[in-house]
Amino acid sequence: MGIYLPIAEISVNVFVLLAMGAAVGFLSGMFGVGGGFLITPLLIFYNIPPAIAVATGANQVIASSFSGALSHLKRGTLDFKLGGVLLAGGIVGSTAGIFVFGFLRRLGQLDLFISLLYVVLLGTVGGLMLVESVNALRATRSGAAPVLKKSGQHNWIHRLPLKMRFRASKLFVSVIPVLGLGAGIGFLSSIMGVGGGFIMVPALIYLLKVPTNVVIGTSLFQIIFTSAYTTLVHATTNQTVDVMLAFLLMAGGVAGAQYGAKAGQRLRGEQLRALLALLVLAVAIRLAIDLFVTPPNLYSLSAVDLN
Amino acid sequence: MAAALLSLSVAAFPAIAQTPPTENIQIGLSTDNVSITAGFSGADLTIFGSLENADPLVARQGRYDVIVVLEGPARPVVVRRKDRVLGIWINLESETFENVPVSYSVATTRPLQDVTDPNSYKQLSLGASNLYMQPADAGDSPATIQEFTAALRERKSATGLYSENVGGVQFLSQNLFRATVRLAPNVPVGTHKARAFLFKSGLFLKESSAQLEIRKSGFEQSIFRVAHDYSFLYGVFAVSLAMLTGWLGRLVFRKD
Image (cartoon, rainbow over all chains, first blue to last red; front, side, top):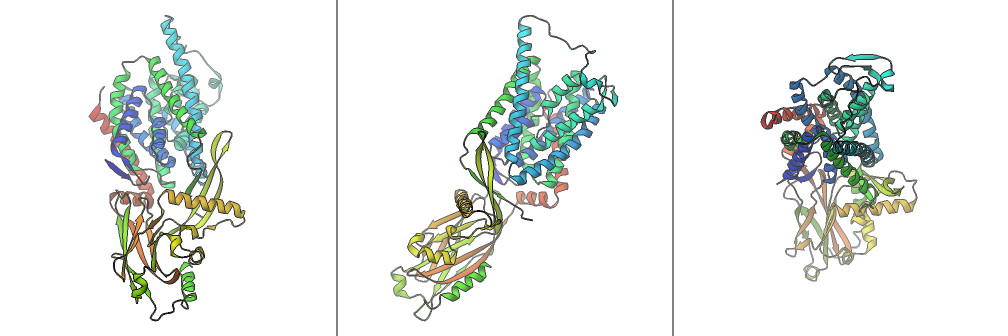
């Protein structure tokens, strides 16, 4: 069944989009990530213009992270104070990102920049995660007890000034890295159309030493607001949010996510991480190939405002 | 501007039409606005026209030719060329053109090269290859401008926006003809201009034109309009819809 997307201005198949949403929702429920990093490249592969894929991706991320955050709220695994500080940074980063987005779009380099960011970030995160999870898998196979992080461990981040206490996370840490992390994620959210969970979660665990059980809830909480803000600003400045496209993806996504979460409970943590790493790497490689292969059309047209 | 040029070229030619009374051409559109809906996947637009004072002998010998053009609104366009930098394909060179017709569909009685000579086409600026594309930066080298102009035409033809329908104009009788021009699926909205050119034995005689408004209609178009006119409210709506869907999805599909 074909449907015409009002903003993207192309006809697409409803079932392809619902299936795409459901598949990504399933994976995001399984791995506890928003799924934006999968949705946006998939939309680009499906010939949706990158600018629209990014803005609509951000819109779709709200639905999945809202749904996820609700369950964490119920379980009490959500640190509002930490989320709030991350969010403050996120708004600043997101605003900067939107500005860069518009600038690159006028230069004609937006598509390239989006692809490069995806390749570099997904490649790095996927690679690191794969190494870590394969090591963990090997360790369990050889019977060694997994190494637990000691709560007393500190790194340079814990020596920064302007310390603040986050009770729910049992954390006493400088606000500078928290704000910085929020800003970085906000920037990526507006340029890549991702929630940034795939960076936020490891950063909170490894850099700030936030307890794992509150990490996902808090990350989802901040992602709701960063991507809501990103969606709003994209809608007002670039008019690139396609609500029809977003709705189809969300409808498939929220359904898939609940089943994915259940499937995820049957797999062990390191197996999950290894699978997610492979998936992330596959997306990165697919995007990288597109950068190097000679395009079918060397010339492209785009409309301009001359004033 | 274009209209002024045309009236000039019309004024320059009357000496050619020798046999009084002079032939004339008229076209009529059954409607002056066309609404295309969301599922629009391209269509043929039929334009009827008539020849006045046609010489029956010339008509019987098929020496009257008609070319009908449907020209879309003109807008500025950037043409970009990708080049390889460190193995990666990057948009490098670009050329901006002012006032490029977004669409340009031609229908003719016979192949263009059989109707009249290239010079006449150039004078009339008739046919996609004779449209003058005004570069925004006139200081660029002629070779570059030529390259990007060619690329612009090629891209427009490839996307179906510039099209040629040879045999698309058919004489139904000595005086009546029907032209079929193609509307591409991505035909731009706005005021389109339909023009008909009459040739006799390769000589340009007369021109007639009419305006046509192409509009998009339906639910999807309302969304588009709201997204542009009330973009903030639209954004708020998109965010609320996402939250509502997330909440409902949890209620309906909850598995924990």
